[in-house]
Amino acid sequence: MSETPANNAPGSSEEELIAVRREKVEKIRALGVNPYGGRFDTDTTAAELKADFAEGKQVKFIGRINTLRDMGRTQFFNVGDVCGSIQCMLTKKSCTEESWALWKLLERGDWVGISGETFITRTGEPSVRVDSFKVLSKAVRPMPDKFHGLADSEMCYRRRHLDLMSNSESATRFVQRSRIIRAIRDFLNERGFLEVETPMLQDVAGGAAAKPFLTHYNALKKEMSLRIAPELFLKRLMVGGFPKVYELNRNFRNEGTDRRHNPEFTVLEVYEAGGDYETMADMMEELICTVAEKIFGTLTFDQYDEDGNVRWTVDLSRPWKRAEYADLVKGVAGQDWFDLTPEQRRSRAINDLGLIIHDELDDIGVTQQVYERLVEAVQVNPLFVCHMDRDLVPLAKANPENPDVVDVFELVINGQEICPGYSEQNDPVEQLERLKHQAGEETQKIDYDFVETLESGMPSAGGIGIGIDRLCMLLTGVCSIRDIILFPQLKNRS
Image (cartoon, rainbow, N blue to C red):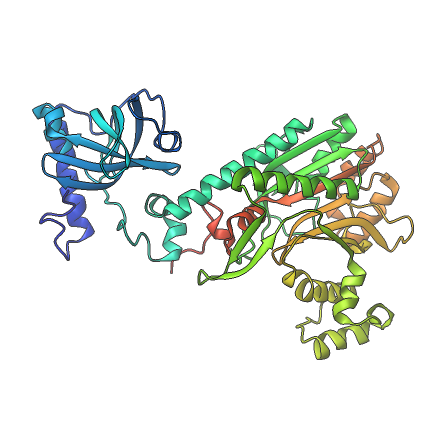
């Protein structure tokens, strides 16, 4: 069916295409039909029909016209949504003159309601023989080219609706993201965890070391922060009597963006009374494997680079390895690394290991750079990295055998941290000292109310925080976080 004034004439501008479609809107109105529809009761979807196809069923469903083959008195077209599509067939013989005239005003991009009977064509294609249809929305702007979609990757992020309607891989990926999140909730709910919601606007942005977004609350006449983590409020709930609790929601950090970071991102935090970092590692391993097999039916996932080539394949098969942070650092930086002076460590990192170490980075930060660049960045399969320096994790318990480190893990997969897990600090005196040490002279950043809450008694507990966007990157194989967030933050156009 024509999209242009002269049968898809080359060179027709978008303005001309829109003008033709606006004329069709008025022609539909002239037929006494609302081009923007109304109620249409359904009993299935295009994806459900295709997945569980049977001939001779009367069906009613809605969808967008994605492709259309005009064969004169017979029309073949695909109708669907982000979950899938199915071929339909409409014949002039099955229509009244009025409905046939209406159909001839429809094209790719329009939404319709379909009533008909399922059948299989002579070429073996599951299809629907249309008895009647209803116009639900006449699209004024044409769809992107059905073969090439959006060529500009940034336009995919700025005009996500066009990307979804023209790129089946992108649409499938975001459907998978939704199903991953639902499967995570199912996993936790089945094990007795309660989902809660805690404040996005906070007096003190705590629970992590990050720069918050600041705003002013006019009604209360005070400065507020968008949260950087829900941790301190979830622990308040544990004090109040929630033994197994989780929140799956957004965090906000006023920091840079790159292929692994977006200032607005989704995190799952889970806390379980009586647990510790090891029980949480066990649960994390079970959760990810359960979700992977449930949604994708596999534990191996190809990871792609920016050019679409397979970079490596991640294998999630259990059991997952566990290793000591210090041992991993010594394995790449030398067995004597922790015996060196801070100056010697800095020198080796720069001169022997080839790392860029900024002057303001302290000694712990130098070691962390060695770990992040030479261990984490090249780790493909799941690895729990255990027992990090206590100054890196002020909300975790010190290890009873070595108080210089804390009982924590970082789960590393696909060259990046997916999830940290802690034996949570519940000693209010120790917690205050650790927060003071982290804050330094900026004591206004300490959440004293949280420390006071701990004095009412929080049970010993294990906790985890999973980066949902990074987990979805892993399970779908994309290399940029923008490809798994529906509407990522972007710079203004110049």
